[in-house]
Length: 108
Image 1 (cartoon, helix red, strand yellow):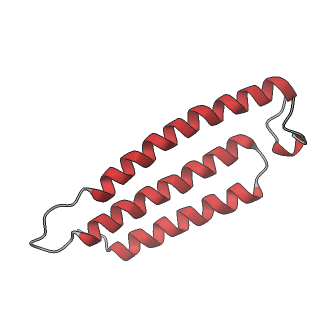
Image 2: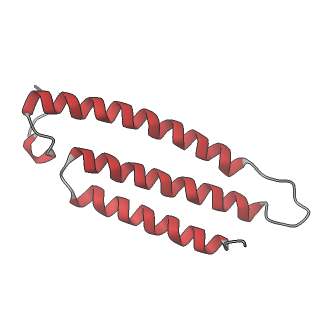
């Protein structure tokens, strides 16, 4: 059973919207990182859906463009998670909180 590409793009748009709203509303640094990850996963879904739609013709060669872009996004997300968690740990050690409102200045 094939899922239509439009349904995949609607799910991707919904995930991205939830991630963007969560990033803008929440003030906890860990929740903000999770919302960024949710937005990156929505972009992955859109890349794969677009690749599937572009190469979905019966006699067309199988396309890997969306999958390759998704792999790059996954690598960027892994790096972002590592660097982001390192910053959150440093922030917690310095201020004993992960709330972003408590950080008025960037200089320590």
